[in-house]
Amino acid sequence: MDLLVRIQDITENKLLQYEGDHPMKKMDELQKVVGEQKREVHYQFNLTRSGRFLLVKGAVEGTLVFDCDRCLEPFDFPQQEKFRVTLLPAESQRTLFGDQDMSEEELEVGIYQGECLDLKTIMEEQILLGIPMKKICSDTCRGICSQCGNNLNVNNCSCSPPDNSDHPFAGLRQ
Ligand SMILES: [Zn+2]
Ligand SMILES: [Zn+2]
Image (cartoon, rainbow, N blue to C red; front, side):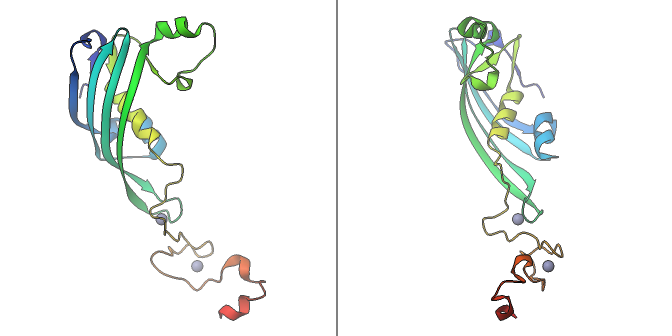
């Protein structure tokens, strides 16, 4: 599937619109960060231009599958991201910022270069930005027992809590 848009086709007086579904397994960066994903992302893009700036407005919607950090079970993580990105040509970045060594991440705007804009890269970045640091299946997830490995969401086990054995009240639990 071709998600490349020719820069010269993005003009001031026209709004280019794209909408469709893209398989996550074709997103290499995403797979690198969160492992194999088999579903599709629904995307919408509106592209226009203001002078040399490209104005990108869009939305991505999909469901990732993560392994929970606490109980290690896979769970669905629905995602809906709306975004607005301004892209300026790589040459004008040098003009604007001179010799300062600014990376793309430090700018509030992105960079475009070459003949085409790759919509796949933009949506992949937006999905990655929306991924939480801690991936927990539920706020009430009880995780796994550190002693026997039992999933405490499914069953209790009879292991005693590890740090309470010499607690003065430990005996009262029995
Ligand atoms: Zn969990
Ligand atoms: Zn246990």
